[in-house]
Length: 361
Image 1 (cartoon, rainbow, N blue to C red):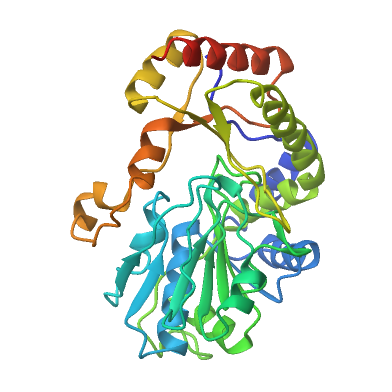
Image 2: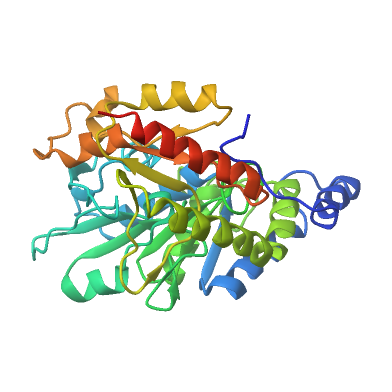
């Protein structure tokens, strides 16, 4: 079976994890946390970085900082067809009202309405397809933009790395991300006050005096072992992204000649992070048929993220009455795109897509 994803490691990159184990610093203390935070700032231009135990926690800190900075905000415009953690992070404490926008059929990203009434917009770079946040900020100067950048690390808009041009953003280092710590994430911001507040929340709310806690906090700390794995991945970042760029470019080239097949269109002024390669086959009835067929050919796939109201706890979200969110969940799915994917296996996947699409009426 060709897996949907597997992380890329080298002996050198794993040696940092062995060093962390041997040092005895296996919990949230140790040198690798600071090394990673400094490396992320240096590589991507984030001003303040706070490592977390996962991407959901990092996105939750985005929600907490939004509430802290703008306590009167009651609603957030959110995208459709994205991973559920993007929504959940804004519902754990304060019940923000989620106003769901529709999805752009070409980019599979949020279709932001131009309106002076937009208060807050949550940007999610779906499958790594980067949204031009600087452009949106110019179009909507009174709107607050925040980013779930968990799928976007390494992507760019107008020359800036994603996650750097909004109030604050989150990263994920889950096992299927371009760089991984197994689990893990990061909160990023340009605002020192927000960084200090997020740091307080993520470390149990402890004050400058040990065991005296000023606010109700959480334990969102990354371990030194996770940070050591992440540090090795950051050193491999260029190699990983070069490999993935080659895989994505080959998919785009070969699939462009198939009549029923469409891939994500990349917005002008942006660079895709090349996280997960998605394909749309027009006329496909449901993902179950795709999954059954591709599994029979030894290929693992994943469905496109479903419309927001498919989730039981979100079923009361007001529906956007157009066909795009439902259509994309039927016609789109994700393909294997890990850094060590062999050209032979990629050709097999492409041939399987050709045969499957030809069989559709």
